[in-house]
Each structure stands twice: as structure tokens, then as C-alpha cells.
Amino acid sequence: MPNELDKRRTRDVAFTQLLESSDPEQRLRNQLIAARLRMGWTQAQLAQRLGTKQSAVARMENGGISPTIKALRKLADATYSRLVVRLDEAGD
Image (cartoon, rainbow, N blue to C red; front, side, top):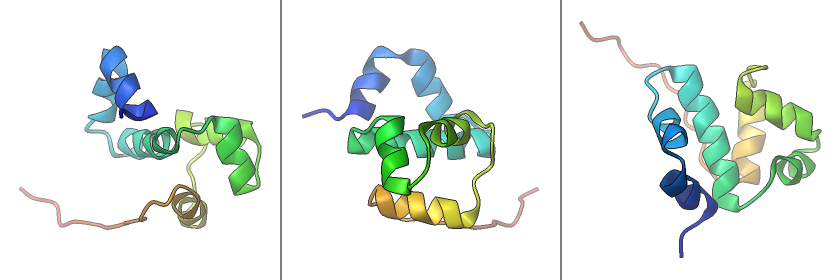
């Protein structure tokens, strides 16, 4: 049974292209959206679980604010996700 993320990928080519972005900030925003959609939640439902407002979730997803590691950890916990932060050596 397809989840909300799979359904959106199927019907929205632009959304799928955004998910595959090479920009690290856009990829993070895409992962935030994907985690929420995987749970089948609206922004308001996620906000309630995070103890914040829907507008704050919207700003995180749209790039209006950069979430802190603490906020990302809380979001990962709420969506049963694993938070991984890493720096890789730049290749030449």
C-alpha cells in the first residue's frame, strides 16, 4: 500500500525532482517533508507533536528558517527517524 510520499512522487514530477536536488539545504528540507509525509501527517499534526506552530514547520520545510540540531533531533524522534549529521572530506 503506497504511503503519502509515494503517492506524491507518482503524481508530482516537480516534487520528485526536488527530492533529488544536489543542494544540501534543499535535500534537508526534502527529508523533513518526506519524514512528515511518511507518517501521513499534515504540517499542523507534526507541529502539535513538536510542541510548536504549523507556521514554524512550514518555515522549516520552505527554507525560511534553518533548524538547529536540537530541533532536528526532536523531529527525528517524532517521525521515528534516525538523525545522521556528518561532514565528509571534499573530493577533488
